[in-house]
Every structure is written in structure tokens, then in C-alpha cells.
Image (cartoon, rainbow, N blue to C red; front, side):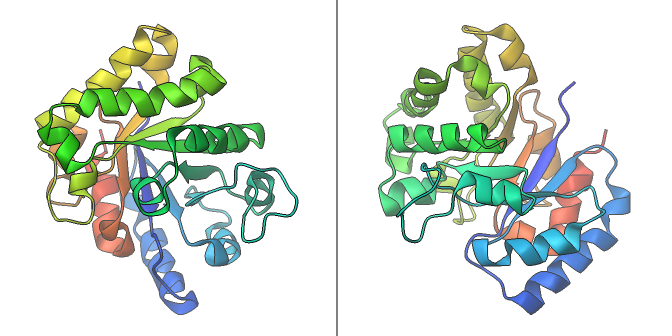
Length: 251
């Protein structure tokens, strides 16, 4: 049975003081979570602070992005081995905001995925469709294209050591959420596509839902057979909300 993972993507939010208080609140409520692994992905500049504050806890640390390069003259970039050096376990790659706002291609995302794995990080690979793509009925084509770019570069076996997050772009930060049935349909498609290549990989890979999961809808979403947790945005900035989602994963 796959362990649920609930990962908070804090995006470009917070200060030293507010992040300290947020983590204190999360840590204080972890006793009620018995099943899910919890993880947080703060902005780069706060990673050392968060790593220190998480020491001795079961909460995983992740970064929001990573360079496709190992080292060198790449101003502003952060290498995967730098992230492992300060205690990161996870890193988000291919988030829709990186793809849509900064023009990151499927191939570039796959290169970041490869760099993360080489350094020993667990990539959280984001895939998902725009509203117009859903309306055109090409959700599966879009998701398959994004997934296949990674498989072409790294092989399907590499996916077994990663996490996939399905994030319908139209449901991120909009207050809209895919119905549990809509989300399950895409999660099942992803798992089925992997199963056609390697049944064992498909069975063990965690597939998270990343479209405005919150305390009000988490239980229904997490009850779906192929939804193994959540990549949480806004709700992860409120300890009570983030913990409630983790508790919804208790079995």
C-alpha cells in the first residue's frame, strides 16, 4: 500500500518570523497524523532556517525548483547537490507556474528531473492541463506528453523513485477544484500509462493531487483509489488547514 504524501508548496510567501510561527504550528499538531508523510517546500532563502527547525521531526524538506546543471557559471541557479547538502529530500520540478510564466519546456523539466535524481533528491514531477486544453478534450494528450518527456530521458524505472503531482492548471489558486471523479480519472490515466511500461513502477509511484486541495475537499479526494496525497498551495500556509489535510489521509 502506498503511503500518502502531503507536501506544502509555500511558493513566494513568508518571512523569517512568519515561517517560524508556521512551522511551530505544524509541528505542534503532528501528533494527530498517523498515516501521511508531511513535507514542506519553502522559498530557497529560508531552506536553512526550515531545515534547522525541522531537525528531529518526521517532516520532510523540499525545494520549489532546481537547476538542470551541476555547477558553474549559472548566476542565480541552485544546484541539486546544494539542496541535498542542506537536508532536502524532495524538489518540485515542472510546476505549472514554471512552465507557463517562465516558459520551461517538457524537455527542460525532464533535465531538471534527471539532475535531481542524480543528486539523490526525490523529484515531485508536476503535470497538468490548461483550462483551454481541458475544454478541447486533450487533457490526456497533454499529461502524456509531459510524462513521456521524462520517461524518454530517464526511463520508466526512474519514475518509480519519484512522485507525480497532477495539477489541473485551471484549479490552482482559483478556488476551483476538480471533482474527485475528474481528478481520479486523470490519476488513473497516469498510472495506466506507466503500467503499460512497468506494472511495478505504476503500483508503487505516489500520484498527488495539486489543484486547490483544502480541508473541505481533502477527504473525498484522498478516498479515490489512485490519489495518494496532495501538493498543497494556499492551505499549506495555515497550520490548521495543512494539518487537517494530513489528518484526512489517516486510515
